Image 1 (cartoon, rainbow, N blue to C red):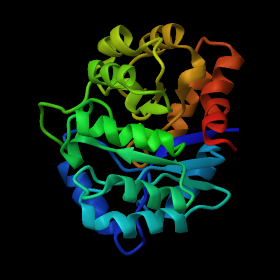
Image 2 (cartoon, rainbow, N blue to C red):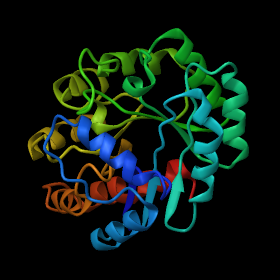
Image 3 (tube, rainbow, N blue to C red):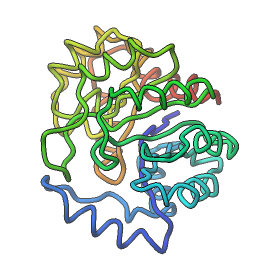
Length: 264
């Protein structure tokens, strides 16, 4: 079984415009693997042998809250699980998180660059803590973003500060803890109480870097993820299958950890 913990889609009517806008902002040479519709994502899942994808929406302004979360609920089925989202500048974050919980969504996606916040600032810690109290998973974009300029608003040291101040709950740092910050991931996050997803990883780090962090962190806190459409899931799956690690580690990464935290 394979669960991809990090994918992106939009409503069919919005997907072409969203894909064009996002692609134009990229500073990397990336060929999107889908057209960002649900149908296209499932087609790519079938080609890669992925059973379930977890969609991660980003609410870029408070007015998007209701529509984004209702769409997230609508797309859920036996192949798609979707997180929800809120915006940090909301007037009532508890009300918004309660809305996500009522819809039955399993977590919240945050993106410090697109939502303009510092990962470990006090107002965000209150939001994470309330989300955890509602048994919601919190997943963050982590590190550099190919479509945004530096300085970046998240890094491994900020994640460490956040998780040590919080009272527990499942937090995930995407892009293996911090895109292009993997020396600091090893220094600050490996071995800590945080999950790392592998999204957009194997195109940018080598196998030795992955194994070094995995051995210190534990395969029980690593989640396979592609960041579809921004990487080729099939290629990343093959890289993990060919790593010099044991089958238990691979099963943890591909699906066991995801099933545990998603409670499926």
